Length: 547
Image 1 (tube, rainbow, N blue to C red):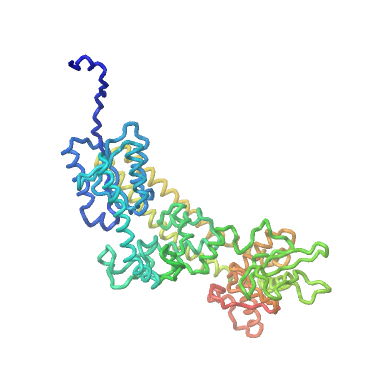
Image 2 (cartoon, helix red, strand yellow):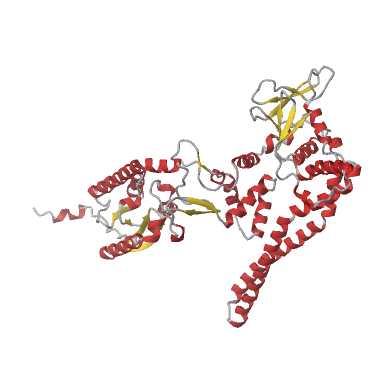
C-alpha cells in the first residue's frame, strides 16, 4: 500500500527567516599594542572578509581599543556590547571575534558569558581565525576549552613575571602611567627623548601648580576655591579629579600597588610631605586638627587641638559633673597625661587652659607697639601678596591671548566665511572666559588696595586675644587657636610645656617687634621697620613655652 494518503499528517516545520546579521568585537591588551602594531586593523579586516565569504551582514562594531581581558566587565567596550545584545529586540546571529583570547581571558567568567550568549540569548560566537563556532556542540566545546587555556597562559605568565615586578616595586620604582603632574623617564617609555637606563619620575609644570593646590588645601581652602585658582593659572580640573588627587599616596612618595603586601616609599620626587598628606586626609575626614566644633565644650577648647608629645595622640577631655571639674587626657592613656583644665586651690599643677592663656599674652599687642606693628605687617602682607601678583601677571597674559583669539575668530568670520553658528558659539566661550579672568583682576585689585583695612582688623584681634579666648563662644576660641598655631600644639604633660613647629607669621611678628623694641631702648640706632623682618615666622625652629 502506498503511503501518499498519509502525507497530510506529516508535521512540517515552517521555513525560518534566515538571520544574517553579525556584530564584530576586536581588542588588544595594551596601549603599546594599540599604537605600535596593526593587530586591531587585522582583526577587523579578517572579520569583514569572513562575513563576505559566508554571506553575513555586519551591523555593529565594538572594541577597537586596548582593554585588559583579566576582568570581563571591567572593560567598558565589552560591557557595552553585552548590554546592547541583552537589550536588542533583534539579536545578532553571531559575534565575530578573531580569537577567543581576544574575547576573554577570565576562565570561568568568560565561560559564563558564552553560555549566556549562546544558550539564553541565542547569539553564537565565531572565531574568524579558525572558523570554529558555537553552532555545533563540538565547536562550542573547543571554544570553551580555549578560554580555559587562555586563563592558564595568563596565570603562567604572571608566575614568571610577578616576582620581578614585585622586586622592581620594592626598589621604589613605579609600574604603569604616572599620575597627573609628573613626567616619567626610563628604559620603557614611549617618548624617545625620555629614554634613560634608570627610571626617573619628576614634577612637571602642572605638578608645580598642583603643589600649590596642596598648600592651599592645608591652609583651609575649599576644593571649589582651589579649582578657581588653578583655572586662573590655566589648569582646568574637574572636582572629581581634584578629589582623587587628595586621596592618592603617590603624591607623598608612597606606593600602594596591589602586588605589594605593604606600602613602599617610592624613589620619585614628592609633591607633598607625608605629614601634610595626613593633614589633608584629616581635613577630608571632617576632622581638621582632630576636633569637630559641634563636639568641643567651651570649657575645654583645646580638645583634639593639642597632641601628646610622648605618643602623638590627641588630647580628649571630660567633665566630673559632681565636682564641676574639667580634665584633658591623652587618647592613648600615656602615663601622667590626665591634666586639669583649670587651676584650683587644690590643684597640684597649673591648669592647661591657664597655661595657654599665659601663652596668649606673648602675642598680645601693646599700645606702644601698634604703629611699628602696622608698618611691619604691611611688609608681610606685601610678601604674601607676591603670589597674587604672579597670578595676576599670568592672568593678564591669558587675557591678551583670549583677546587675540577673539580677534582672529572675527577675522575668519568676516573674511573666510566662517559658519555663523560656529562663530557665535566660540565667541561666547571666549567672552565668558575673558569675563571670568577680568573679574579676577578686579577682585584682586580690590583685595590688594584694601590691605589697610586688613591691617586694622589684625590689630584689633591682636589686642584682644586674651579677652576672647576661653569664653562662651567656643567657635571663636577654636578660631584663635587655629589662627595662632596653624599646625596645632603638642604638650609635654610632665613639664606642662606647650611646643609648636610653626606660629602664624602675623603673631610671630608681634614677638619680633617686641624684641626689636627692647633692643631699641638699649640702642637707639636699631631700625625697627627693617624690611628684612617681613618674612618672620616662615622658617621657625620648634618653639617651647615653658610656663
